[in-house]
Structure formats: C-alpha cells, structure tokens
Length: 95
Image (cartoon, rainbow, N blue to C red; front, side, top):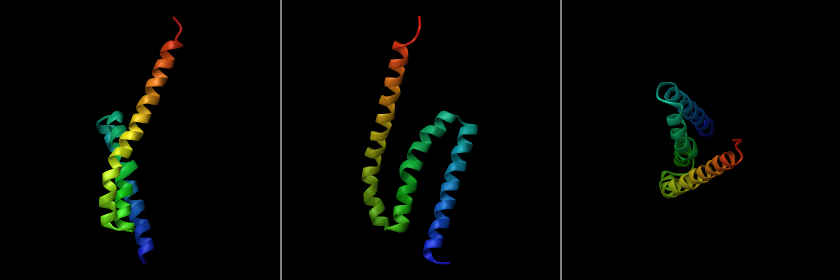
C-alpha cells in the first residue's frame, strides 16, 4: 500500500472516531456539550492533524497559533447571528 492510500485510510478512521465519540458524548452527557466539543475538533484539530501528516509537523505547529482566533471568530459570528434571531423573534412575538 502506498503513502496516499494509507493517508486516506487514516483520515477516514480519525473522522469516524471523532463522529462516534461526539455521538457518545451527546448520548451520555448532553447534546449541548457534544455541540461545543464538535466546534473545535471538527473545525481545527482534525485539519491540524492532517496538516502534520500531509505537509509537516512544523507547519501544523505554526498553524495552531491561528486556529484559536479563527475558531473564536466563527463562534462570535454564530453567537451574534443567534442573538439577532432572538431579538427579532422577541420583537415580532404576538402579545
């Protein structure tokens, strides 16, 4: 088996493992906790893992500096969108 096929199999295995782990967290802890946990691993940790495998560990290490601000930006956007939805729903409710 060549390196490319091995890399594909590792990607599939890691992705399946993360999805199964998050579904177990959702069943045993709470769906909210699984949602919070899914934001980082699916958004950044898996990508950084495969950068380390595919490009180089040094590149992945340098990329981690920018992963957290990117995640914070994304979560801030979602929070503000949710806040706007709540405010608009509150204003349009029938009394």
